[in-house]
Length: 374
Image (cartoon, rainbow, N blue to C red; front, side, top):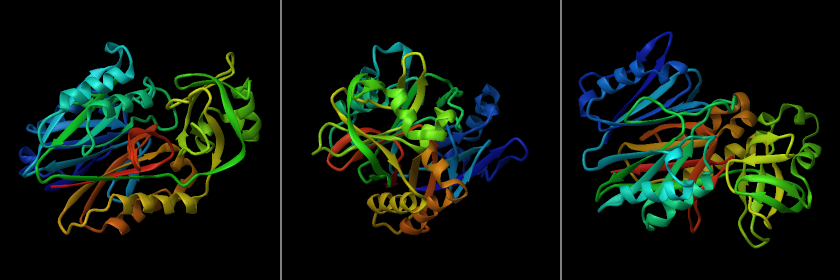
């Protein structure tokens, strides 16, 4: 594997492009936060630079290149796999009956001999990420690593975009399959949040919309915990996610708030919040988040001394908490994985990864990593 990393900005244009190697690249990952990147001409310039590559990407709440996090620009990682193949599939969310069916359909299209890893990039606001992950997990057997994330839009929560062999569009899901007998993909997913307050019961919900907790209006109860932060909802909700678990013996899954409905007194989360499940609010601090980013890196570590790709998908809520120290969670990844790691990725509205023995599911407020080596 060989690679190069570029940065594009309105001020400086493209920096870091190798015209000799451009036609040799077969995978290009793009993470962006600039309206120019939505233009057809911008995409055509990029595809002209890499005429033989699969191009896939997502809008972000922060772009990761090496150990730098940037906004209002685009970061590109262009890769040449020497012994592996890449395939891209995508679908419009509106063309499928539900997200689970969409995920299963895309997963089925990627199935093939020597499939080792599937990376999913989805619109971050128009889909139930839990259902999407379930669909992929139904058809991709164990041994195929599944990771990815939901596109971001800074802290604006307006519109998100995915790029899949075409100019960026809203309302789509894309996935790439990586195939190769020698290809390895190893993932890690850790959070670093602590529960507080009493554990309560979700008494009315539908999919990812929560209406009542302990038979009380969910939004009113949530606001009572947030205090002064309540006036800045839904953005401030990123600082106070919710843990959800089926019962007291189950491992909790974190859910991040995406929207509130004052009329219905409901909360909309990035993934499922099933009726009857238990829930508690969460809080964290900088040290815990950085420590758990290191644990994710340790879990995804490959015992290799050659160049390998690392895709980091971290939650926008972590970035808000870490503030100016945000790059420290990327730096601990570099420290753990070493100088041979080519690190790219983005800050997201949701992370897709396996956790322990479970297949791929939607997570929030985690650092999710996958290390890829051929």
